[in-house]
Image (cartoon, rainbow, N blue to C red; front, side, top):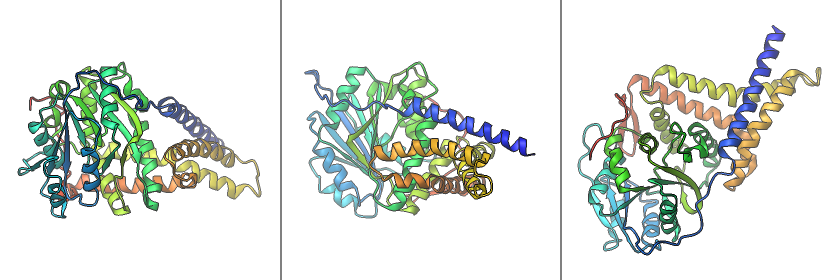
Amino acid sequence: MSLAIDALLVVQSTLVFLLAGYEYLTLMHFPALPVDATHTSNRSLVSIILPVRDQARTVDECVASLVGLDYPEKEIIVVDGNSTDGTLDILRSFDGKISLVEEEPLPHGWVGKNWACHMGYQQARGDLLLFTDGDSTHSRDSLARTVNYLEVTKADLVTLAPAAILRSFWEKLLQPPIFWLIMMFVGGKWVNDDSKPRWALGNGQYMLFRREAYDRVGGHSAVRDRISEDYSLGRLIKAKGLRLRMVAASDSLGVRMYSSLPEIWRGWRKNFYSVSGNHPLFRATYRLALLFTFLVLPFVVLVYGVYLAPATPLNVYLLTGAFMAFFLWLGIIILDRSIRISPLYALLLPFAILFYIGIGIDSTIRGALGMGFSWKGRIYGKPITGQLEVTVP
């Protein structure tokens, strides 16, 4: 029995080491948005489409930053989803600087954000379409730089990875590991490799499309029932053989996704559901088991090894546990330093993963029982049927 356990620990250590190698290949030296913002003389009109719903806390700063963009050839279309918290009053204070559209009744089968984006698209005149979120803030040169990057790379979609604005304890503890997991799940910088269609991601906080590419994949109409519509749109872009580019832009875009533990829990609960596709019980359970096996169990092994150390200083639990914990901690410490978070939060990685496993269990149970997911006054979570489809909006 002891030999079998030793062998399993060696296998687990080897897999964690390979995971660290994969992490290095996909996440290290991630491309950044170039500083150069020079243009051709023929600038394209950019239609900025901003869907909002009950975002009075952040929408003023967001819209002000969009109005202040150093890119004259733009129109700002804000679609309000029947907000009840004062958002609409704030938007009306920008009269003359934005086009305000009040969302029509949500059709059956549509996610609210996707419907709002579709409505904004129907009003848009630009050859380039920028979809962004109401909790984002934009530097003055961000649009000029992104348009220039799109033109230079001949990309069909440029999506930005923003600076994460993290203020509370729970944000600093839970958000970085989730970002880390997502980027490894989608292949990190392999998203930018045209020869790897499997690896794709769009970040709905900032997606700049060529209009013809957006039309070709069917736009938000093609992903009308997808909670993680940005991920699905990124997949559609690459499935059509179009060029997707994702770059870090911490000096150009800032986003505070969630500001409290309840928001983090509810927000990622619906996202965990959506990335599981039809949310089969086996797939969700399999992912949760992998999270525990490779991101929590190594620390359990290490603690047990420390417990045995007084009697057996160089026991296999201590050696393999320390080996695995080192590589796991190293990855998240590098991430935390890059986003100016204390490395002390990285030491709490196993607890953060346990929280995320709890979110996943909650999501799985609610999805399996058809209970749905409450978000901004609406309920989502009906089973998704069929494959992604390309439609003409």
